[in-house]
Image (cartoon, rainbow, N blue to C red):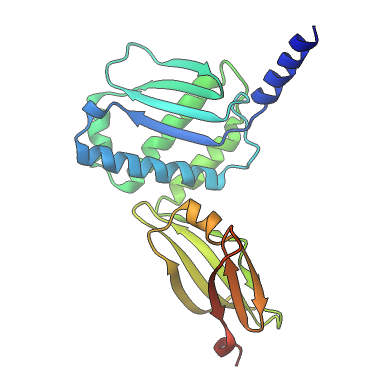
Length: 238
């Protein structure tokens, strides 16, 4: 009896997960190699774009992973769950796929958002979904189709109060990099330059883990407490 109760409690804990991944996929033989590469790059960007506007505690039936599969030859849409994954088959036509491939980035982002809303509408017929929260995030994703920024925790105000060193992760559909901005107290930008090009979310979390002021230099450390770089702001204080 004790083992049975423990098993139920573990299941309950698993089911209370919040959504943390949203992926799209399509069969490789449906797209030419160059189209498949572009498709995968954009859906990776779109996943990050949506999560940039979603609260961390967003609910999709207690599951952590929503996998949307585009199918050209399926009979009917389907919703299947296993482990912590919800797998949803979304039927699209050849003309829809062609329109997507020939569309602008703005139209592609809107296309993915429309299908995400439809998928979530289907899912909420079977389980609890924070649908209104998703609607707002999808709308913001459409408005920010050119990209978004995330200020990293290593950003710090200078002890004088005169300026701030702002380190940002800049994410665009075709590129991603880490940028430094030297800001006056008023918010005016004194200087702006790249710290890392062709970066990723792992670089921002691993290579820019923490920072501290040493005189007028902001020293940034990676996750192993190794010094990554040092930014001297003396010339901006005069």
